[in-house]
Image (cartoon, rainbow, N blue to C red; front, side):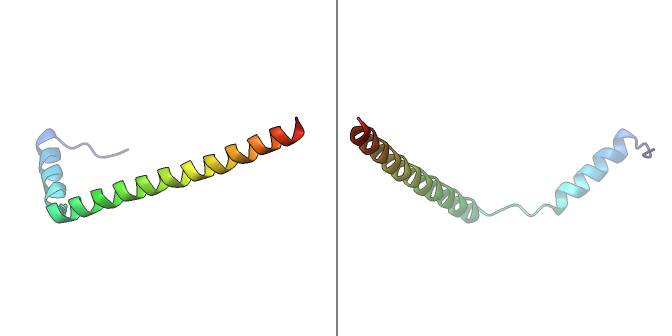
Length: 66
């Protein structure tokens, strides 16, 4: 069973852990945000092209079969 800690110890330990966190700089946040937006746009274009190819192929098949 885990040892119990009182609320004061818990707050102390929590503050000690938060002090260890290395927060990203504004530039790092901006750069990663831009990268995510670019990757999302590329993914959207990729799936648009795949959808277009599949739709065109199905239309061709249905026209050829009918």
